[in-house]
Length: 471
Image 1 (tube, one colour):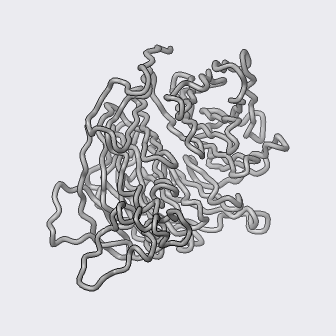
Image 2 (spheres, rainbow, N blue to C red):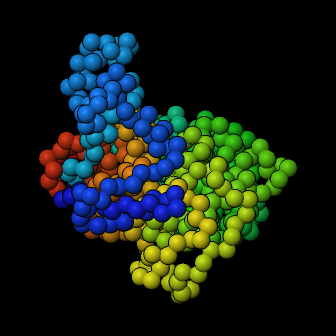
Image 3 (tube, rainbow, N blue to C red):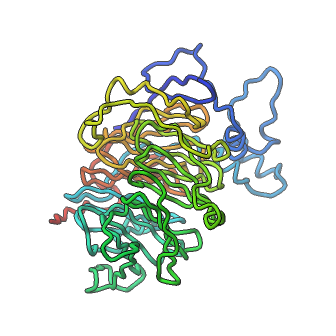
C-alpha cells in the first residue's frame, strides 16, 4: 500500500522547511531553494533546449516523452540520442512507488540495503550474522550467502569494492572484515569455506570500540571508518595498515564518507550534532577540521555526499534531513541550544513535542526536510541517482516503517511508501532503473518500482520467499 503525501513548504532565512500536511491550498505556492544547487539540479533534469523553448502566453508544462522521441528521431540535438539531462527529465517523472513485492524474508532485523555501483548486485545485512548478496539481473538469485565473523550485536555497515570483487563488513568491534565474493562457493562461512581477513582499525592492542560506518574509496585502495571513540580512520588496503586516525569529534562518530572521487575530502557526522569537513592535504600542517557545519539540534546519524566535493545531506536525531554547502562552513562550532532533557534517548522514546519546532540559532544548512522519524536506530538518507533522476530527490527510511521521498529543490514530500511493520534503517534506489529496495527490522526486503500495479503484494513476483530461520 502506498500513497503520495503533500506538504507545505515555507521559506525562512534562506532555509527551506518542509513539514507534513494533508492539504495544500492552490494559492499557497511552494517556495524554492534559492541557491545555485537549484540551477545545477535543473540543468541535470531539463530536456534539450530546442525542445523546451518557452513560448509567451503558454504554460511551462513538462515536454511530453512523445515530443522528446520525435525530437530525437529528427536529430534536434545533433547527437542522434538523448542527452543525460533528457533521460533524467523523463525518468525522474516516474518514481518507484508501486508495489511492493517481497524479495526475501528472514526472522532477523535487516540493517543494510545497498546496490552496487552498476546496480547488478544488491547487499543486505541482517542482525543474525548473515549477509546476502543478490544477483539483481537474474531474478534476485542469491549470489553469495555470507556468515559473518566476529560479530558483536549486529553488522553495522557493509561496503562493496568498486570492482565488485570484495565486500567489507563492520560490527561493534575495532576489526573490519573483508571477503572475496567472486569465489566459487555460494556459501561463505568465515574461515571455513572462505577466508575473512581482519583489518584492525585500532592503534593499541587494548583499544576497544565500535565501527558504525565504513566505505571504500572510489579507486578501491582505501577504507574510511567512523568509530565510537570519537574518531575517523583511513585504512590503506595495499599497505595493510591504518594510514590515518583523527580524533574528530566530542562524541560517537556515526557516519563518514569520501566527498568525491579524489579522496582528499572526508565528511563526518557525530552525536555531538556536528558535520565536519576534513581535507587530508591540510591535516599535516593544521591538524584540525577544515570546517564545521552547524544546524542539527541532535546527533547526526548518516551523511551522503552529492559526489561533487561541495554538497552533502545529513539525517539527524532532531527528526530532520539537512542540505549543506561546504562553502558556508565555519571555523569552529558554537554551542547548540538545550532542546530536551538529558534523560531522552532516541532509541527508546519519541522526540519531545516541545523540541520539534526549535531551530539552531546558527543554522548553516541550505534546506531542512521534515516528516520522517529518526528513532530506534541510525536511519540513513541519500540523494537519488544521477543517471535516472539527476539527483532531483532525496529519500530516507524512517522508524515508522515508511520510506519518504522529498523534492530536493522545492522541499515537497513527493512520496511516502507504506508497507513495513518496523523501522526502515536503510533503503536504496537503483542507479539506473526506477526501482527502490527497502530493508526493515521486520525482516522483509521489499522492492518498489515503476510501473508496477500500484497494489501491495506480499507474495513474490520474481522468486519465492525464502523462509529460512536463523538463530
